[in-house]
Image 1 (tube, rainbow, N blue to C red):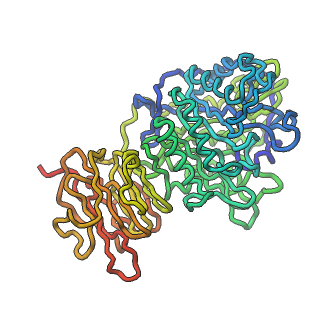
Image 2 (cartoon, rainbow, N blue to C red; image 1 turned 90 degrees about the vertical axis):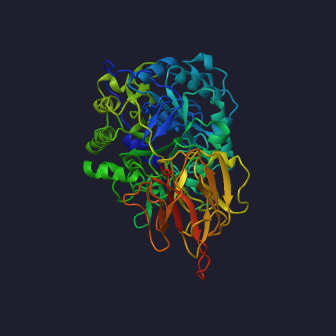
Image 3 (cartoon, rainbow, N blue to C red; image 1 turned 120 degrees about the vertical axis):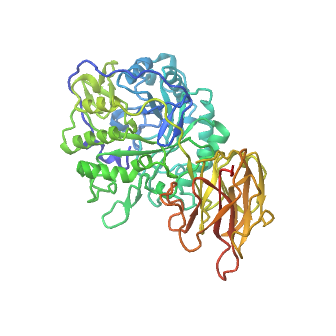
Length: 624
């Protein structure tokens, strides 16, 4: 959950009242793994839309609040001591819990874990699995294995979520602010490879949610694209590519934005960027159609409000303070735009992988209105979602009222559908919403190349081949895509598969003008591909052009092109797709019916680097 949740949880917990019969319809098991993406949608292996209707089954990432005896339930969030395993296995048989998940309309589960849990070799206490005696003597990771097996055997999709470094309740200034706060980045990557390989044979383990709520620690902010050890964009890129190349090429990669930066003090810069940085710097994975972006929203937090009461509280509005129209505008700006705007380098499914509200005894009108409005926005945008938390404890129908399902010590269940929970109508509206179903047409891919601080080679084939320009900083389009745009400075490029599948049949590196026929950029040095080849990559030394990578394609191509100059301003087609792939830089871009056949640059301008100034744009179709 969100920053400083521990400080405000006491104000937001709701308690329980009387029960009534459950009324939600189960979700049918009708999907085929693995999952992919098409534009803004997640699709299954048959190309049919698979909407994530998920819940967060927490516990394996820890519930200890960070002080006091870890064995004392009073020192755990809401008194719920999980023993580093999914919550509730001491209270109800696993199979009954999973059927309850299905009964409230879910088809998938986000399953948090901590890095500490992965390596804990101690068996869980017998009391922690009292209702599931077959799990006695198992380590926390072995219990996690059993939960994954049971969920997937029941037809659920499972998304692994690295929630924390250490096993404790999230989220505040707690040593778990970043993927590398309490551990080295190398260990974090190694644990991800371990976990994904562990479940590779289980196709219904469909996703790797890389880290939860990246945020400021006491001294430092995370960032998006600065190239240092706090660069969440770069860390996620590297981990994702390693997972896809070394562990499982079929798994979805889920990347959350930045949850918080700055000190929450009036007058000082602070805020919750969420997915806003994606607009100008998105991820291009080594395997296309595997990226899902995620975001978290709670009514008691805000775009510039930490969620705290007292210390850390500012005068900024919380999400629950906005009118319905204001809330929708803020949500769109912060996250929903990623799925709303098609044909951009950042276009991807958005999974709201956490949201929630207090239950039966939540009487605050603003909190109730926020939940209703937020659900309406999920429905109107047909957005994938995961409620937090799915499971909680109750005693005489009182306890952690945020959960959808609660069990008491005797195994008696309390559900959102019992008839006494004000959230139930909105919940039924959400899980029963008639969104898009069936086949999703193939969409054109648009990808940004950003060799800002190092190589940006996003082609699996190219990565497997020898270094084409040793010592230079290189960028290459994902397999099947070609270069279509380039920035004059900064080194960024734009790739697409629109109009041409550029699966390579052979490559050629060009460092001179041997392929130039007609002089399409007089007085400029021209790197031009040979006939039948398209530019799919480039290399720079410092800011200077060093080479272009040309790939031969298996279809006839046009030969006559036009020169697109961008040395004095943007030169892109009207209503060009792809988005602002190099914000604040001059950019050149070919039409979607063209390919880049060459790049021109000059070293004649004193004091200026040998940066690209023109593209040779050639028609894809050869003349008949």
